[in-house]
Amino acid sequence: MTPSAKSASHIAEITGLYRYPIKGLTPERLSRAPLRVGQTLPADRRYAIENGPSGFDPDAPEWKPKIQFLMLARNERLAELDSRFDDATNLLTIRRDGQIVASGDLETAAGRAAIERYFMENFQPELKGPPKVLSGRDHSFSDVARKVVSIINLGSVRAIEAMLGGTAVHPLRFRANLYVKGWPAWSELDLVGQTLAIGQARLKVVKRIVRCPATNVDPETGKRDLEIPPTLSRTLGHMDCGIYAEVIADGDVGVGDAVAVEEPKLL
Image (cartoon, rainbow, N blue to C red):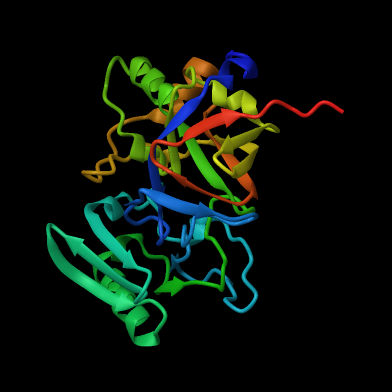
C-alpha cells in the first residue's frame, strides 16, 4: 500500500535536474532548464542509436519501443562511456577511461558516421544490425509515446535501499529528469491526475513509471549488480518507482526550486 495522495502535498524540493541527449548514454546535469507546454526538457532523448533496422522515419517520426535502440536495460556497457553533447555545435564527444574514443557533429552525415563506426567496432556482441544515429525534428526517444518529464522521489529510493538490506542505490539508476526530496516514500505514485507547481511551470502527472532492468545497472561502473524490479515486485506487489508528468504551463525550473501539489480548483 502507498500513502494517500494527501501525504504527497508536502512541499518537495528539486535536488537534481538532468537531461539525456542520447538515449542510453550519459546523463547531463543542469542547474536550470526551461519547461515548455507539451515538450520534454530541451534535447532530452533527442537522439538514439538504432540497433538494427527499426523502420524509424526521421521525416515522419513516430514512437518506437526501446528494444529498437542501444539501451542500458540490455547493453549495460554503455554506462562505461562518458558522453557530452554540445548544443551550439551538435558535437557529441564520447570518452572511455578518460580518453576520447569518438566524436562527431550529429547533424552531419560525417559526424554521425564517426559515432556509428565506434559502436560498430566496439559493440559487436550486442548489435542486431548496423548501428545508426537517429533523430527526427523535435522527436524524443522516450520510453513512452508522449512527451514527458520524469520525476523520482528520493524518499522512495531510500526505501528501496532499506528493501535491499541497506545497500546504497545511486539515484541515477532511474535516469530521471527531476529528483526531489521532501515527499514520503511512494506517495508520488498516488499523484496521477494531479498538477505539480514549480514556479510558473505546471506539470500534470500522467503515469507511474514501471521500472525495467536498466535500474539494475550501476551508472558509474556499468555493472549489473542489483535486482531492483524483482525486489519492488516481491515487496510492494508492483515494479513502479517515479512518475511521468506533462508540461501544461511554461516556466523555468532549477535545483532548489519548490515542488507543490496544487489543490484542485473548486467550481
